[in-house]
Image (cartoon, rainbow, N blue to C red; front, side, top):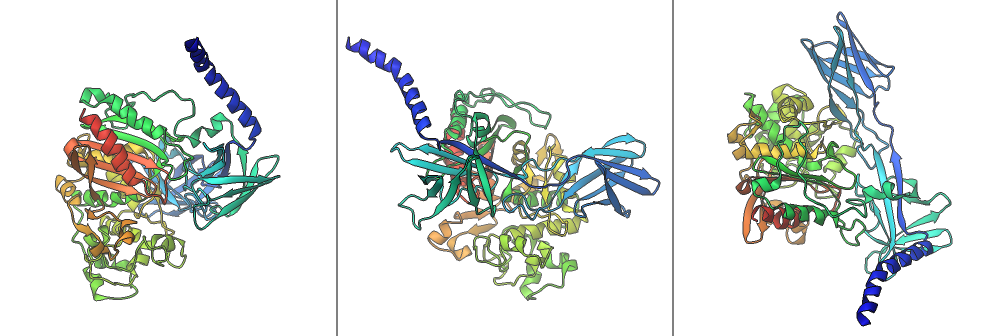
Length: 603
C-alpha cells in the first residue's frame, strides 16, 4: 500500500508542480521575459553599381548618386549623405574595393565607430560592376529583462544586453511594486544602494536607460522572441555532440572521436555553457560561441544566445593580435620594417609632435607592440585623459596615431608596462606607412583572403584610416584560423602567411608584466593584470589541467573574446562572449579549456 501511494505521488508530482507554476504565473503578472529593441540609422543596405565611361566613372546605390573624387590610381566616391564612401581599384578587368560606413554618433551603446568592409563585385557588362552592401547585422541595442521568483519567493529581476553588457545597477535586482510604479533595487548587502524606477503601462514596462540616455519600453516576449536571452531556448533537449559542417571556408572538419577526443567530454563542455543561468545574481557568463580545432581539423563549433556561425563578432582587443600578424606579413613580403624599426622617424610625416623628448626617437615597434613605449597612457586608469575612451571621444585630433605620438614621455622605452590601445594603433600606422597601403586593404590582401575569411568589418579613425587598437568584427571560425596558422608555423592550407621565424619570435617572452614593471601592487595589480610575459601582441600563459600544466599563448579582448593556442596538444580554442567590463577570461581558460576540453584529449 505504501509503495502504491509513493508511486502515485511520484506520478502526480510533475502535474502538481505544473499546476502550481501556472497558478503562480497567473498570480505574478510581472514574471517572464521582457524586451526592448532600439535600431539606429545605419549605412545604406543595397546594391552598389559602378559604371565606367572612358576616363569618367559613375556610381549609384539604389538610386543615390556617388560623386567621383579621384582617379590617381584609386577610385573613390562620396555619396549623397556626404559621409559614406567607396574606395577601390580596377586591376585589369577585376574591380576590388571597400565600403566605408560613417560613424554613428547617436549610437551611444553599440558600434558608433566607422568601419570598412570588403565588397565582392560581379562584372555585369564590359564597363559596369555590381556589389551588395551589407551593414553590420547588429546595429541595434537589445535590452532583455527577466522577472522571476527566487527560491525564497522574492520577486527578482535581471537586465541583460548582448551588445554592451548593459545590465543596470547590478546583475540581479529586487522588484517592488506599488500600483503602476515599479522599482528595481540592489540587494541590501550591496553598498552603495541603487535603484531603477519604472512604470507599468498597458503596453509594457517603461523606464529610462542610462547607457542609452533615453526612455525604453520593454514589452513581454513570447518564447521565440525570448530565446536569445538564453544560451539555448528553454526546453531544448540535452546537447549531443555533432561534427561541424564543412562550409568551404578552408576548414576540414572531423568527428572528434576519429582524432582520439572524447566526444562525451566535449558535449559536457557545451552543456556546461548551456546550463549557465543568464539571470544569475553574481556573474552570468554570456558565452556566444566556442570553436575547437585539434590536430589541424575543426572538431567543434557551437553558438549560443542567438549568435550564428556566419555572424561576425566584435573581437575587441583580441584583434590587436592582427597587428602582429600584419607585421609578419609585411616582413614576409620584403617590406623594410621589423620590431627594431624606430617609430618616430618612420611616422615623421605626422609631425611635428608635441612634448618633444629625446627618448621618443629611440622608441621601436617592439616597444609599442608590447605596451612599453614609456608614453603617458594607461587604459586601466579610468581617469587617464589619454586612455582609449578619452582618445576616441575627443574631437580635436582625428588621427589617433598622432594623438598617441604627441603624448609625453614619462619612462625610458622598454622599462614600464602600461596597457594602452593607442600603442597598437601606432603599430598599425607604422605598417600602413611602410607598406604604402591603407591598413584594411593590407589586412585583406595578406591575411583575410589567404586565410579564406568570410565577411569582416574593420574599425576606422575619424580621418578614414584603419584603427588597429581593437574592435574588428570577424567570424569565430575565421579568427580560429590565426591560431591554427601559428601552430602550422605560419602556413594555412599550404599557403605561407608569415615566416616560421616570425611565429616563434612573436610568441617568445619579450616583456614581463609584474608589479615592478607596471608600478601597481597588491589588488591594484591583480584587478587588471596577470603576472607573466607578453610576446608581440600575443599574451603568454599557462593552463592548469588535472595533473598537468600546459604552456599556451593567446589573444584576448574585453567581454570574453579569447583565442587560446596550446602547442603541446596541437589544440586551438576560440570563444566569443558578451561579458564586457567583467572578468571572464580566467573562467574560459581554466574552467572550460583546462577542466573540460583538455581532459577530452587525454581520455
